[in-house]
Image 1: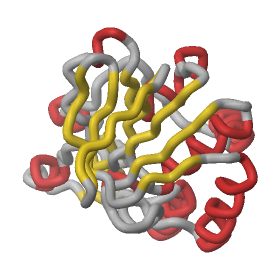
Image 2: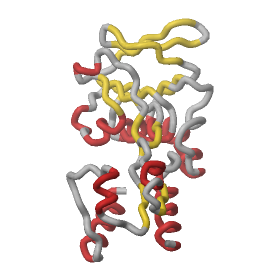
Image 3: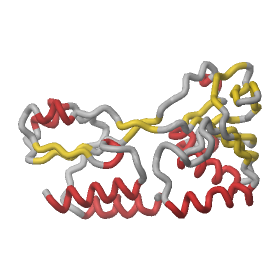
Length: 213
């Protein structure tokens, strides 16, 4: 993904694309540009858990964790066994960390962003190889005294961790489509702005719209 991002940066630098950074794309700004077509690709945002102790730095959302790998301790609990949580857990384990994935559903990779077939086939085997522990059917109930607390059919479970990474799903960012359509613009939503999925789907969305307008 890092290499892909660099490729896109290079392509955009040589193509006639006017890029505005550090500016919020508010409807009134977009209207002044008088576009023929508007493509909304604002992405998604993580569903955050209410974490009373998040301010102490022990509990980190998945996006923040990806951006700040130096904040991740040796003993890691990942809350959420979807594709994002599992791939983060695997990378931590490959880097020699002690990792536990906790999932509320009966199976990991069962909800959220669809898992590509190769990922879904390989992750359980790689978890076994790198010693990632998995607790399924464990529902998160809260944080206290520096521990993550869960419940399963047998009762409460508490886990210690140097870092707790929350990866409990994503939702599309708020959409401006209805507001912009009032001005008569042709508006397309693509990627996670339309439906949360993978980078592959986002690229296909962009190609399809760009190829047909």
